[in-house]
Image (cartoon, rainbow over all chains, first blue to last red):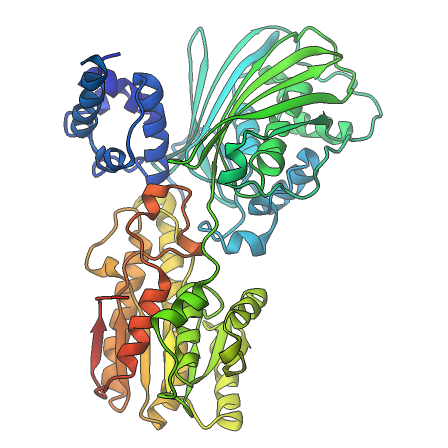
Length: 82
Length: 512
């Protein structure tokens, strides 16, 4: 599946128990109190399963906003397609 | 006070609930069952069994006669604790029921359940005894052993009368959950807490599919086989597949996940000795360190002892930890004097002051290090009391020793060290209680310097340390943490340099 803002929103909504409409473009660990360090791991596992990728630890530590998640995942999916 | 909206169901647990569930489920994992064990964990107190939380939430589902649970998924986002009101928000659709559990505004658990036609009524499960599974003590799996994908198998049956009473008290049958299904959820707790992964487990997800539910259950033991299907070292996450059978028929399949808490390095004393060579710079001096049995306090006590100082090591309950700490550095063990008691208790502190006057030359150094365990809190009504209590207890752990012992330090023209934190410079959103408490103890230190001008003061602001109290299962959360030995070595080296009475020296840079 292609990582877009919409598809990533679905995963974020499921993990954090939010409505899709509550996840704006600026959604991040800073703006979401439910995004704890433990939940971050759960989110990373869910993203890997959803998009069929294997994330590096370095990338996982930077994926702390909707924008960063989409752009990082795009690199993985793009690399796989190349 | 809590901010649970009127009409929204609430779940709440007592210590007795945990004891009962332990007996019933055979899950004796010490994180749930032992006050002493849990106190040393990042949670600071016993954690409610996730499976107990899930069953309690199912007990808040709408009544649905003629329905029977088919699938259940429970995601455990944060631990639940005793004595807290958790609000349950339930959304029903034609296909599934979703329950979200909140602590204030924080989501702590989410359940998704689907039901089909069936009969969940409590049947006569017979006058049978419990069938205890193999383990009475939890397995000690770590990342290495879990990577070998271990298995577990056996039979399981909670004590039938107690199970029946549990199901009845939560009115689970009326919600479409049969006694056998409740037993399967309890078994999940047992498997995670006792078998795979065992003691270090932190239950993350439970997913159950029930099959052959038309079979009558007369209470016979449930046979199970389980296997770690994968272990991801990046997350310390174990995935476990399991199957449960009655008379050779599969009655449930389980997909379980648990994080595994890593053990901390236990050779901290030797690490410290390498960073801080021994000397006789403090020979003849006497120090008192609060919270000295573990973590930074233990390393500070050892560091001072390495310099020849006699160190009164205060701890409240951790005698075993003190003994372990003393054994780590046998060359200084005789200079480490145990001092068990509550540093926030003024009466006890004054008794200690009397002992210091009679048994020691005086008190040259006071290190206020004792602190409470640290969990996330939100700034909303459900947490208001907890934030206030945390700050009050944290301040007492510094204000009481300063109030009771500074006079003795002043008599010797000594030094008082107060352990603060870098959070006073860089607040952490999840820690309003901790940030407030550290600001408060820094304020106390500033005033103490005015009231005791013959005493030198040092405020230590370490960054996040890797200790028992902060040991998250998340490798990402542990990244960037500093070993307490480094902070202890830097602090002791600073104490060996010239101090200025009546002034507060700030220590915020730590180098090994």
